Image (cartoon, rainbow, N blue to C red; front, top):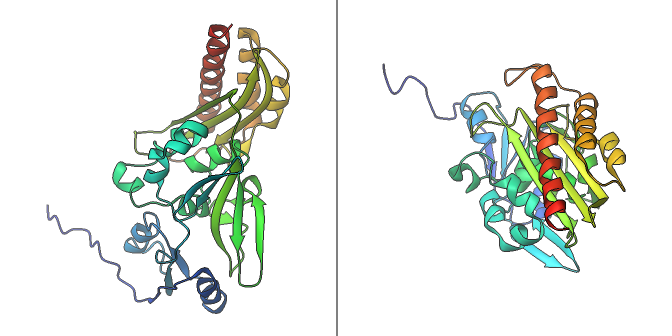
Length: 298
């Protein structure tokens, strides 16, 4: 069999732009056709162009724009530039110590080679319901900073997604930063995904961020991925656990509730029924870990 069976070159022509600042990039977006694509890490865009799944007429490479690769802690908030590499987030001590759920999520995105190229902004702007960083950041109640040609706006990440591959970004807008409040010292965080193989996209995932004092859950975010058109908060589960102390019966009840709250489909990665059973298992695992933690601390 020939090793050259598949052509790995991009086979169509396109125009290529390298703006030096955000406003220049936004201006290009406003003037160029709708099929124009932003190049950040390129780990999703380039393979799709090689396979001719995407054939954009224009590419805007934003890698040269400064000020978008920072991880900064200020006023009890963490701000992450959209061009920050996934691997840099995974290895960052601030993230590990103060937003560990994001560390847990970023360390399971693809391979190390992918994480060395892929950016947090690209992972979010792909708007995949399976995006690992999205579930973790929604659990942290993160906001996005979006810059356009004539305006800037702050939008909560939960409202950023409109559907598979669809976000709220307007034609001339770019996601520049993600920011969130640092959880307090009484927090518990959990992120797990189940995939067909270790490097695959999630068939189902669950992020849990909780504030627990004296065994009682005072704040809680539960976010499921790959079980609906967008990552979703399991609001009914959250409300059922607030101001409660965990026990085995309550954990069983919440696991069943979680399976009823999601809206999965059957696709190449798994069936709807499998996803419902999987979310039960992840929910039980998360809260059994939390229960063991609270009992140990008594």
